[in-house]
Image 1: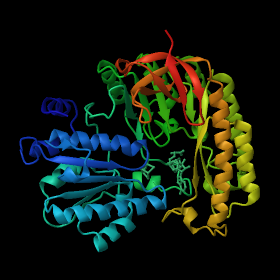
Image 2 (image 1 turned 90 degrees about the horizontal axis):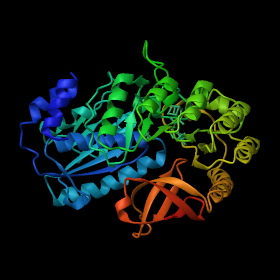
Image 3 (image 1 turned 30 degrees about the vertical axis):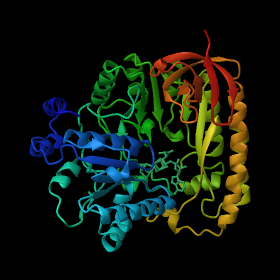
Length: 468
Ligand code: SAH
Ligand code: SF4
Ligand code: F3S
């Protein structure tokens, strides 16, 4: 974000960000200093990191990919599972070591873990070498905290979410072709295992006008694809008076003529017939839906507070499949929820066998402090949970491969995004249905949508060529 952009953002939105910048923008303190940011967790965090980068670069910082070069290291953390905690504190150990060699190094921790009281107490007790801690509700405070930094650890985490702050459409985005567009923050569902409603606060939808302004600006900037982002996108608008529902918002976004629209994540409970009809009606709404199942057992679904039964999920799944042409559907599944029995687990396998998902993110249940499930008795051993996960993954992979095989010798549209990590001679991109494709082609095609002929299929990706 450069200075004119910031000033424009300030004109357009009376917000906290502009207030902060009044103090910092004419200040050369940070000019040319380097920052290194490491992001854990979901797309929400990835997009928050884009906001953090925008804030830092507007005050003079430059990004580096080399941690050892950095004057400022930021860890944007995730709290969804317990092992995330171990990873972050492991990494902090390396930061502490670096700080011994580089006295002026600033270490900042933010994201969902910063919203956990236990983590903050642990930092206060054992990790005082960290300089700044801020939470998910006050990212905008970060520049001010840097400016006012003293030798002491500065923890500034808002426990309560505030109003939605518009920073204007001036994110520095990781991609020039695909962009995240937040449509809502937080979550009101309170699934009993999940920490997100505590770390991200209650649901706050952005105004549809602000969302559409952002989409139109992205079109002007040449973006090909946008992903509407929220923990529960199809509950959009329920917290605002006189606001559109998600289907109507989706329709308005489709009418802007952006080439590709995606959205994550949809909750089965909020999935309406109107939503299915709109997805089916517009060619620029991609036929790809991530529809978390979590469990196939009615008993466990009830304990999880998911608000649907196995049959209702399957009915919704079939309705989407029958109405949206060529749709691909992926899911999230948790194994080993407290006292999950073999019978419960078999119900989950049964849904996977019925739905034959295109893919699934699978997790072993992880106990999260202060969630209702943390109080539930759990006699299932970790070995048992690991063995269930293995069985589940084998089944999920079998169906992924089967679904991918249907693409062999077919021509599909692929948005090419960059050079493939596995093979520098290839580009990678995604089909409408969100299949990863590695394509042997000219590098000039990055950022374009091409007809790609699929020559090989694997469980997690496809290979293709551009057919003359
Ligand atoms: N809002 C999304 C999911 C957000 S978290 C939704 O409702 O679908 C992403 C996934 O992490 C969840 O779908 C769930 O499968 C998994 N998850 C959340 N809490 C978990 C926990 N305590 N243990 C294991 N997996 C968990
Ligand atoms: Fe967590 Fe449930 Fe909200 Fe998803 S819908 S973020 S799983 S509480
Ligand atoms: Fe993790 Fe927070 Fe996302 S807990 S999954 S980064 S909302």
